[in-house]
Image (tube, rainbow, N blue to C red):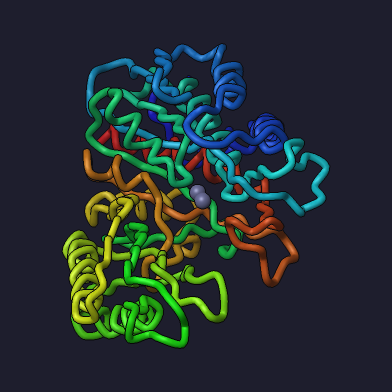
Length: 395
Ligand SMILES: [Zn+2]
Ligand SMILES: [Zn+2]
């Protein structure tokens, strides 16, 4: 047993673990579960951790697990996170370990996230004597819009001084790690607007309050609002994705439903979007004697990589995989991730792990029914988790 674990040790040991990581990942892949309750995935994780000396606590409001490794001496505490849930969508990869449940697929790589985190637990447990402090392994269900991270934080997690997560990225070649300081993924909030007019005969609009032209005006005005009021230096996106009204060619509808989503890269822009959406919808509806009822379903906050922690993680990547493995991202990704909640509790970072399947030029992205990943990248992910934790505890 080494007393001072080094990054290259981790890489070598992680490569030896690869068959176990692949086996666990494939079993989870074949048996995808959705939402906050992922009991069979939880069982597979617990089985894989059973021979390690960890303090395991099972959450009650979700199938989440927190497993803690205590080093030989007291010190700092880091949280490493892997999410557990799949997506409600069909799988069309034709892999031999494809989903056995129709309409469910691990298309976001959370199966690999779990396997890599289990691998990191094994690597770190074998080097416990050289560690000062604690590593909390957070296995979290319900990432795909269920806010599982927030639910687990509410139920209670042990204190931590730093937090780290990896997300697989099929667009990035294996061996490369995408990263940037500051916002790396967007916030999201969904909205539902009901424009209420007064229906009637299509030939006599003057006797009605026709909500259709009002809704059209609102959709256009919302785009003007974004370009004129949201600073280009702190961008936001507001997209109307659904418009529903009417039942017949000769009937003016009573109401129109306008639905969509908003993304932002800062809390300030997020709040501006919410305020502006409400003001524009109600103002335009009011100008035409209609009303607009605006309801907003709050999603996740912005994922913000702490500049200091992200710089530290870059250093670990360089030591582990070499300078050329670093892929500085030109900008944030406008998708959302509930690791954002964890990063509000302590400085940390989420990095993107390249998993592009060998030989593919145009890989299917996450959330595609054809999404695949290079399992050869999984040992790198496990080693990176372990090396980040070790270096953090040693600092
Ligand atoms: Zn996803
Ligand atoms: Zn994901």
